[in-house]
Length: 383
Ligand code: PLP
Image (cartoon, rainbow, N blue to C red; front, side, top):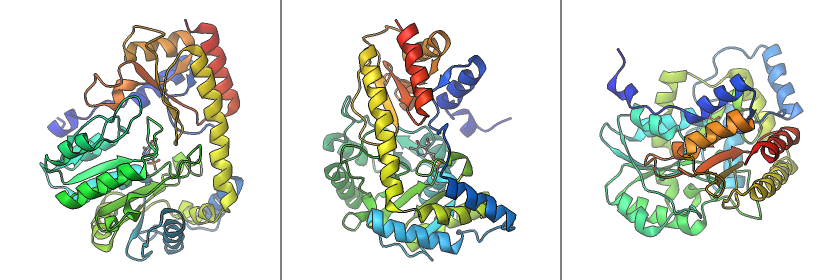
């Protein structure tokens, strides 16, 4: 018999759509994992570390040289003064980092603000900790955080807020002004911010990623979560990290220790090589994704989808109401089975399933040839 808690877990629409894609041979634009290679130097470093026998437990907080690289990068790129010894923890993907963070700061019954639409793992992470999600919807179609709604959510006296920028599924890069509103409310209501910045290096049109923890005194009350999955195209390596002050990090580390012990030892060695790649690597990454973004925007616009131009990450959250009256699950099923392209139904990113019900999410973290095939199928079969 499973727990009541387990029964309140939502199904993973992303996993279900990926399984369907595999089963019927649809092009998988549902799952946000690249179908192209990770950087050769990083792969080589992983293989070397295994061969050189770095195959046993690493210290639970993370390989010291990697923590130093993360602290240096947090200073350089995010504007954070993190002590590599006390403030940085290497975990098994940002997914684990978010669970650790929520468990670390909430007691059963506490509230956690999760703006909609959201990345699906935040809800189970909250349920695991015994806390309760509190939602409000970002404006549609701009997907902004507005003061009135934020204030209402904070007035419910939450313990924490989870904020994801650049955002999945909307592609929004949260502005400094919006982050300022969140920072003020966190301070006024004594709330901890947990930020998911996994797409921090993928931004477009000169949009700048800003870390909430870099604003004013927010470092003291922010748990910054990121990882290597998206930046280095190694989603299967399960490498993430958490940056927070000593007290918050201590709690995160305890949970990490008792759940996963440590992140994969040889891959942590390879991660130091990844973080040592030159600036040109990051520029190249954003440029490559920008090309894919433009290709998909133009194709989807031509087909009659409507959407806000993604400012970051690698998704297009597209409204199809000019193309079909089907609801989002039925439309995604039609796209997969009849057209041959798998996407994710929009309402799966909302607790209030009315949100997103005329939308599907496309990812473009795929080879050009994969995207071209998907577009060819839609041009031929959609309509
Ligand atoms: N956070 C967001 C917003 C994501 O979109 C994803 C993956 O799609 C993750 C976290 C998972 O990252 P990781 O592989 O580091 O667990």
